[in-house]
Length: 468
Ligand code: UDP
Image (cartoon, rainbow, N blue to C red; front, side, top):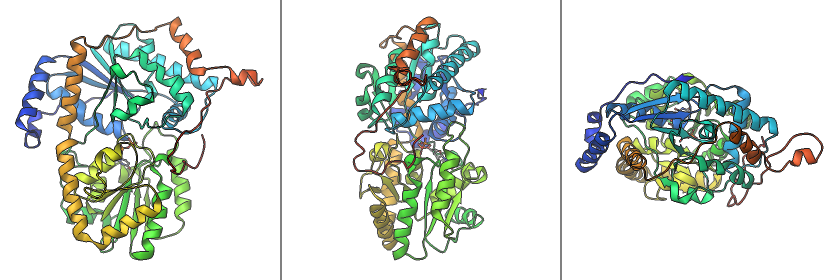
């Protein structure tokens, strides 16, 4: 993929949303960082929360005269199958990797490091997002200061992944997570900060959309807007529990026969090879119920005004995740004043205060009960929606994220966090052994070292239904 061509956005456009002192702090922090060369690196330019954030954050940094860039990885299916397992392992799923998988991971990370150095020389700060490119600093030769921004839910990582992947944080000046609790997974506490992501209220996805216009879009997609609608917008991913959403809908429909369900999840994220399989499984699980509408098409889930329309015109938005680093879809729906029922996990807990600005649920039964409550009591739904929008306004809009990032950059530039030495060349190869761990596979005589893991402490939640 390489470097994305992004413009710049002026802070002034956000003036109406920023308190005067925060605005002043942003401007003076940006002044002190003028010309700073920052490169964000991740695995995909579209699909998922990281791409969503970078599309807005990078132009906003550029609008403040920070030389911010965004570089994405070019890789094949094999690599993304491996990195999805790393992602799943860090979120607690039983899975394993063989030596070839690990070599594939290192090879792509080594190539990424070379390509980044070729494209940018020695940027002042490199921000690496998520585990796909987490090993890049091990191959850098130029002492660039690095930040690992981990967006995933580290509440209960699988032990082997925790033990063998998280040591890569030793090559970072700073680790950044969405919630302080995640640092306990094994991040270096003295070098870890926590602040949550945010949404951009002025994108086509989040700007105010008149209800009639939103409804007209949904009618065009086969939804009957005279009848109640619940929606989940999410990649087709086991952690988002789309099967549980169907279960909740079916239970609620016994009380509200006119109920419709929409599952919106464009199959666009190149780093998410599970999507197709999960979508097929959900389609067969949903059966032939004409009131269940499933949209894997990029023209639906990949179209920002259409996602906006679903989040605006649904009676209730569901995000029934069982792991969730933060959950931008929750923020997006809350911003539209739509009541949200979220899985009681990870970053959703940071956003929803149960019974005040939404509901937290731990099962399909609870989710169904809350759907029925909200449909039966439109006044309560409206009050919750108003509280939801206000909590997003106060805590989860882009200028706040920008300021948190600028403060972090200031600390790094001031030298508060030393960049650990990089391990270019032979030392990096030694790390392969670190990741591969004991040679269990070889001892068993089939020539593969395995990285094995066990899921821990799911707090009674349903496991994703299939193993990698
Ligand atoms: N998204 C979208 N269309 C889809 C599915 C998801 O635009 O069909 C967007 C969604 O609106 C949100 C992001 O992808 O902005 C998902 O971020 P989130 O933090 O909820 O989950 P992630 O995919 O990063 O696990």
